[in-house]
Structure formats: C-alpha cells, structure tokens
Length: 344
Image (tube, rainbow, N blue to C red; front, side, top):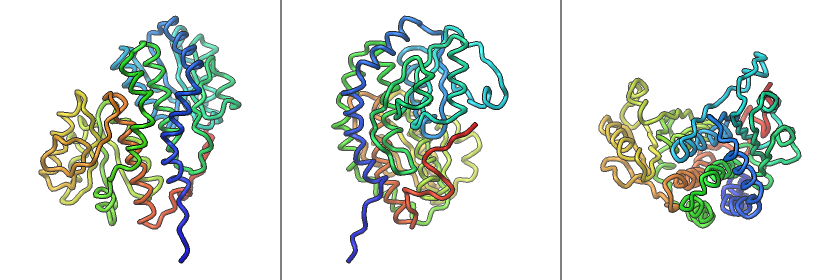
C-alpha cells in the first residue's frame, strides 16, 4: 500500500518551534539595534505596511504595541503610493513593513517613500537580499528557512514573534521577553494539541465564522484566510465586539463558529458572545475553558497572554491541514494562488 507523503504545509507547521528558536538565537543583535533606534526616535505613531498573512502579523503587532507601549499603530495601504502617487507626512514616525519575500513592488515603494519623507523604516523579511531589506533602515531576518507551501505558516509565526519581540525589547519588558524565549517549547506542545473535534465538524460545512478580540483578532483573521486558502471553505473573521451587530443574522442551527480566546481582559466578553451564538443553535468551538455551551479546544499556555495567541494559531494550522486533506484539497497548491504575489 502506497504511503501518503506529508504535505509541505504539515512539515512546515511542525518546523515552527525550530524556526522560532532560530529567530530567537540569531536575531538578537539586529533586534536590539532596531529597538534602540525606535526608543531613541520615540515616534508619535507606527505605520505598518503588509498584505495577506503578513498583514495579520502586523495586526498582532498593533495590539502588542498599543497595549504594552501605548504606541498608536495604523495600517497604511500600499496603493496610496504605488497607485495614487500620494506622499505621507511621516517625518519622525516609524514604519514597520512585513513581507515573507520582501519582493512586492507596492510594499517596497511605500517603504521607500516613507524613508524619503523622514520615517524610520523597519523591514521584517525572510530574505535579507530582497528589495525590502535594501530600502529599510533596519532589516530584520525572520530565520524561518525555506517555506515551500503556498500557505504561509512558519513566516506568519516568525513575523509575529519578531514584531512582539521588538515591542518587548523597546520596553525592556522582562516577563514578555521570558515568555518569548520559552516559546519554542510551548509551540512544540501546540503542534500536537488535539483540535480534531473542530476538524470533524467541518466535513460538510460551506461557511463559518472565526472570532477573536485584541491580539486574538489577528489570529482569527489568519484562521479565516487559511480556511479559504487551504480548504476552499468560506470563512469570515470578526471581532467578538462586531459579530452581533449584523453578521449574526445568517447564523443558523449547526453554523460553525470558532472563538479564539486567551486569558486576558477580552476573554470574558468573547466567551459571552460565543455563548449567545451557541444559544442560537450555532456549533461553537472555543479555546476558553470558561464557556459552558461551546466545545472546548485545548489551548497551550505560553506564560504570557500576549504570546498565547501564537500557540493557538499553531494548533489551528495543524488542524486545518488535516481538514484540507479530508476535503480532498492539496494544501500546498491552492487553486489560483502562487507563493509570491507581487502587487503594484
């Protein structure tokens, strides 16, 4: 009997703990220099430039910077410069660009403009020979290693780790730094967490909601994208503060919902929303043990609520690869997609 070879995606998900360990081991000097530059500048705000999974990592960094450092963060659309030719008043501000390939012309053009206008530019990329690295004042390598699957997994996690590490170094926050350096072990546990109850429930599903709030909203965004990318399954991501404002109207009996929660200030409200949806007949799964009517999924704790969402997304990746295979979809080669998308 022919043995089915594991997908690139499965192998790369299992490589995430080692990739994060490489980043933490090899990225310290560059991260310290970037944090020193950011601390010296003391910018009034931080602009992020990214697309796709990288933009979800930027959303995660946004919450980390705003919650921990009080530093306002705004996502800037690359087309503002690449298509509309606008120049932004960013003198004295900082710009964080995230791109696995570092090759997308619109992101490179935006970062170039910001640097010319007097912003401190920081580029997170898996390729230090890329154009993004060349136009950044500080180019920070992700150290993820080759990523062959079209669906980004290692580079999402390493981008998020690098971003929150920058915040931790900026603040010299000892508890957060300790949690980051303990992440590889926690992520190794997260890869093996059993999320099969959720996977089994999605066999015939056509649509679902992913919910989060705060840093978990970034994980929710990433989960919804991966359902579409790898499973050809329609998924929408909402903040738990928004889903009852209109989207709840299409929730019927058996409608799948995944509510990503960690033990932070947002957990109570998110669980309350999850319980309301379960009361409407939705099939709700959550990573919080505080819910009564939702199915609890195992959640690996990392020692800090800000890094807990990273363990959740690793457990999710392991599960969604299995769902894709069960639905007859090759997670390495989603239809209509390429590994590197170069937008203008």
